[in-house]
Image (cartoon, rainbow over all chains, first blue to last red; front, side, top):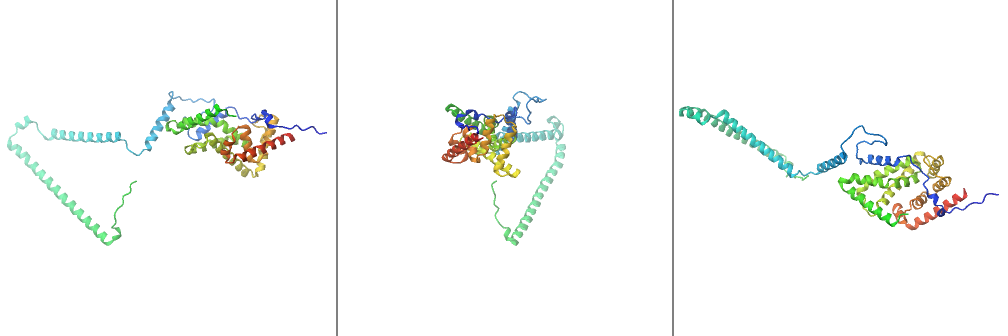
Length: 183
Length: 190
């Protein structure tokens, strides 16, 4: 005679709800680290397994601070607008540097080329005129050369424009308006 | 089962996680909080589907990587946990399908294969009746199996299960009822 079968009612056997599965010791701590590591959301650049100690130390709260700094810097990098403060600083530095150069140049010229009032008093008028004449010639030569440079440039531009006009007359398809795209 | 205060606490926890995650400065903190809050529940859900610990580990990690990649697009129409549970379920079922292909087994053979894991007892500490229950669950069609696990072990509401499985509540109730009857019969016959 076979043994009598026992009917099982799941709702009356609460013990069946116990978890039959287990995990290795410390598994969930390691799982957290593995997930954070794979998603790049860990605080440290490397993960020490349970029980391991890093031979290096950092100041307390360093990584929190570092993370905030990196996030702040990466956020700033993404913005394409140049901050007003930075631009102003750059402009003022450029102006200051230019002024400094002009001042230095002016004083250097004075030191090398000019004489003091007392020294000039000892020089005769004829000697001064004699000194100024060659300089006058130099300035005249400079102006002349400057004017001729202008003339040469005008001539070049004229040539370029006429060459351009000639190309356009031969190739009418090149005669179009440029479009400027705002990127 | 979740009590009213537990459910309220869970909602507050989800809100806090999302608040932290949406702020660039506290994003890492938010994600860490999310992982710590849900990894065990997600793991156990996955483990009951794939049975083997190593596979459950892989699937759980994959689930959280997917959660991380898609959390920006989470629109809050469902609970955060339900949304993650759904991702985990998909990942676990996809993993089983891959296994089936990899081992050259059809889906029924996969469950026989998984049943062997239970017999081998690696990372399994249950009493004989609990192991029998797990083997009986493995014999269920995969949808009934999923519904049974979510209702019997995880105490999810039918509304939540409907969101996760995209199935009507009526169909879920029928699936659960059939699963219970099959399991009771299986345990009685052995």
